[in-house]
Length: 491
Image (cartoon, rainbow, N blue to C red; front, top):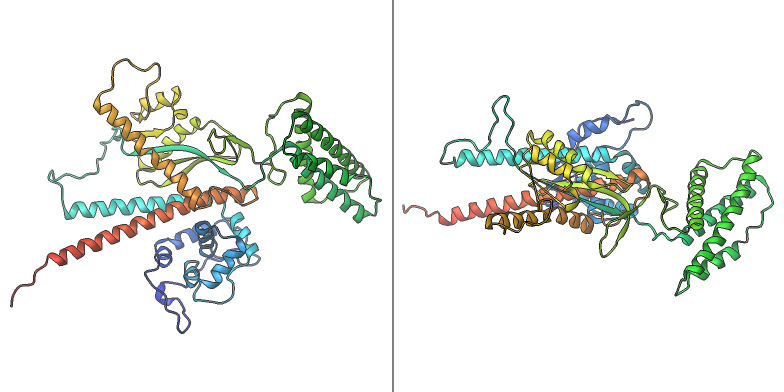
């Protein structure tokens, strides 16, 4: 159930402050809270709640505001609750009517926030924020044009005639990356040891719950066999295969025990069912790779607790293979990003280019003038699509290099494209270093996607805030220069 109410915290002056507490109205969290259209987000958020019964849910500003603060500083859930309790600026940002000493939320409630605010909701909020920023930039530009009209006397905005194709304008940058999850580096014998330990825990619970005598599982011997390889300085192929063979035999025997219990009518719990299905699939994959002496298999499981994660081959020097969700990010002229596609499965990012360009046209009403992308996007199909729509795709032409030397203009254009394309790499670097995309710590399927979308959203949010602040500082400097040049008349 969700109850939509008007925000009781109308402005900073209405924020209830205890005696002796003086808050700065120029604080960045106060300005950001006043700039975000919470009321519009609140109306869209209320549509997620269909029922009218039950306990009233927390407001969107409390949920989204808390997650923004957590993404900014990478607090844990419990540390975030402590920060919200101690910091009055945070309490104003999340929409509390006044400062309070009690925690506004519990740590467990933050998990429900991430489940409820799914990636689609965050992406919609991000899109609305970017559109509002674009409109504000356009209005400011028009105001400047009215103040200082161009010499030609015409408008800078070109409108297409009826039935005429609009002119291509703007730049679209596109690139893909991986948001690695916080999992242990997957090794076959380590995954098998973890699966064996979880099977033994389930068997022990069966025996305690239904009064069975505990079967022989040779737990100490299996653990000793695993540690003999895990602690070894040098791991030969023969020793690795011997350890995998032993661990597979232990798992096979434990699965037999559980199947005999379930044949007699004893069922596992709902959590154990999903865990057992993952372990069964892991056992089949490891048995297949062991028998065929290979190291790859389709839909390979690299984490028992997060079986949807797949290895993503990136080819980077630091980490050739990463384990997490892969996504394509498009960046516009303002340096603000949007997620075009995201998936846990590895995919060819060149298939995203046409969809990203079409979405750009839906947003702006025209195709981009140029498209800055990596070499993998420059397929024949994508080149043909860009050529047919008058889009200049960055990079060299297909075929052997021409013997004729490039002109100075072509070299300058190529250099400028390579320089401008760094913006999307800079966006990745900023999100991974400062906003949590470098290591995703959430564990569930949906909350991991939410964390990635939040990272992109918060990156855009603070970029916009810094530009607005820079514009205000620039405006104040201009006003100061005008007053400095002013000379009062003599009386």
